[in-house]
Length: 427
Image 1 (cartoon, rainbow, N blue to C red):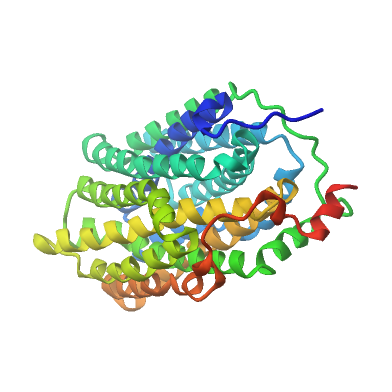
Image 2: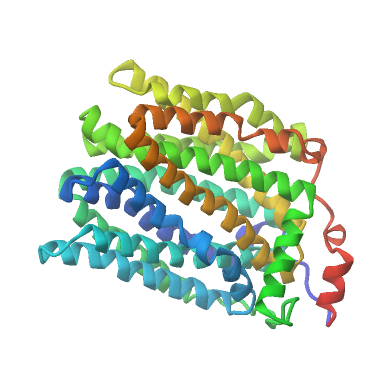
């Protein structure tokens, strides 16, 4: 039977439209929770810098603990079901926080458990979402589809984090967490409308889970371009997490600014992500796919060195401008880098490739949060900010020094199947 060619525009695919709208709700919940949960710890439980660092670490440590096997599991499961269950789990976890607060039973231990389990659910949601996307829209529409999704994530950062800061300021942090739970519940219900016939789940490496994981890791680490993309993104995440973990303490305690100001600052970063995502395709068309990644890094990554100068008055605006430029670069990276790695990976390895990247990228977030808390205790909040900004400023170098810089266009679909993968797919 001949498979029809998918439409070039992802918006003509009903399944993509459903996934996009559900992701919008999920992003809203995640970003409101991103602002509200640490502020619950700081304002309601008087958490120290080390405890805030531990909270951020536990939120991402799941990617280190189960990140690699999650890819093999997702490759063997119905991905829509994974997305729905993950959102339901996040809704229930967030709902437990205001319930405990109202009962005067909220503790740091509960917050630690909530963010740890929420990280596990987020891991499965992210891997399944990026794996199902090429199946929904076809590889020819990956760049516009990823541009739309990254733009949505950026809008979510602006709207979600801005709304999160405003809700905390107006209604208290626990009430803001209620809104995060409701958004995840709505996302799960929306995902039930996806009507995508998924392929039979017989991935390569059926000899065992370990062999399946190893094949995904070899696919990423054995390719110079994929390896460079992973290193650059991991360093960007490491540096940004060191910075972001200390910002609630800096804004609320040292600068004595309202929670809404922190939400607006993070929202400005989301605006930078949005602009970077929207400009990614024109930049790639003018400069070439790989050169656009390299030039954006060289020109914009050093702007992060303005962030540690943050203070009241004009220093807040100067640091904010540096953060917007840094996020613009990351928005461009997310569209072009994700599209490149998806085009270089066959369908049977998509889950494991995405999980390997998630293991490295979000594992870097866990490490960054722990390092940030440690630096905050040892050298202070400002010292931690300088360390994170320095890492972000040099994060572009792996891609800049790799063959990615010379790539004019995305690879052809036929070129992405290695002999090993073809033999595995034919079993």
